Length: 114
Image 1 (cartoon, rainbow, N blue to C red):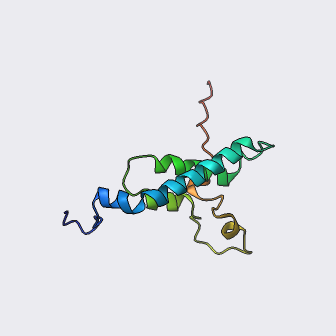
Image 2 (tube, one colour):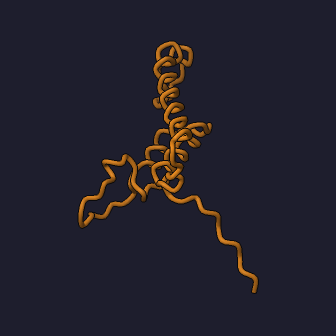
């Protein structure tokens, strides 16, 4: 067992034995949500910041970098610290359009010919 204070006290087999079925169910729920999006009558959400954030979070989730929880939490959080003149709907939508994961993933503009 590691003496690292940030390590989990359970080994990988214990984690799988205790939590695999719960997380299997959560993955199936996400898959069902994505399938419903694919089968939806109108494909009108491609530009929606929530869908962008969700897809970016899924990419981060499948990576092998440590700290996925923090990274995804930041992707789905509003980075602004200033007070708003009036309350927005961020809490009702679960992600802010200002969150790093919701930002447009635009390609840099090609340099203009001089």
